[in-house]
Image 1 (cartoon, rainbow, N blue to C red):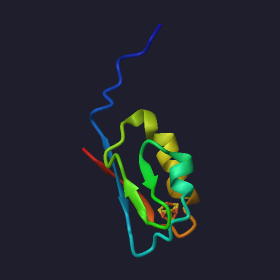
Image 2 (cartoon, helix red, strand yellow; image 1 turned 30 degrees about the vertical axis):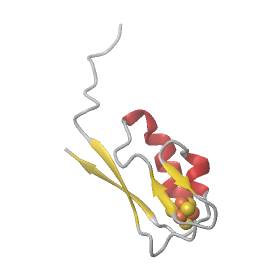
Image 3 (cartoon, rainbow, N blue to C red; image 1 turned 60 degrees about the vertical axis):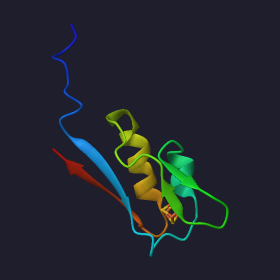
Image 4 (tube, protein in one colour; image 1 turned 180 degrees about the vertical axis):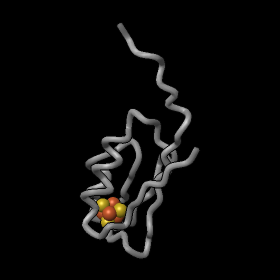
Length: 77
Ligand code: SF4
């Protein structure tokens, strides 16, 4: 039996980057290529500032593995 529907719109994830900290390692792009993009010799660009819940695991991995801790996730109601 499937459980009750989960309201995935209730809490939105918002991704932010501190560009002063970003050194362009590109770990985030490897972990979540639909959310982060890195041009050569550049700093990261956030393609999707509000990823849906299906991308949460990838985004969390990107935040965790960013070598300079430049990324963070905030939640919004
Ligand atoms: S992993 Fe961190 S330092 Fe590397 S490009 Fe992404 S935000 Fe910048």
